Image (cartoon, rainbow, N blue to C red):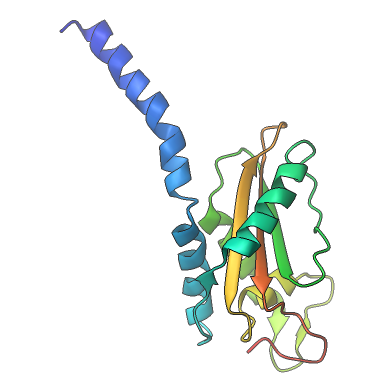
Length: 163
């Protein structure tokens, strides 16, 4: 086989496999495993996938795909974390790790975030009474990716520690 034909075949294979590689890194199991890896570090129960939460997250993510703004949906009954990444190859684990990185700003003894820092994504991620999660990931028209996860039971209850 001539080398240019072989090159073309290799490029075509890679091109057609990339979407499945990214999808493989954004499955329900990928989201749940990433969450549970973080939750294990503080000894709270594992989460399970919740299709109702996933459907809610997917609906909201679809609405954000045109503007990709980092806004919460305002879900009254669910906890929520949102993430935007550019370029659009960020994965479920990337989003969860970004939220988990806020741990450095959380002071368990005072149950507060460091002055001028955000830690609420982290505390929702490890909230001890949360039992399930549902997430969605959509590419945005601007080349970014929008990822959102919803949680039941919602965390970040004022006056309570996450664990």
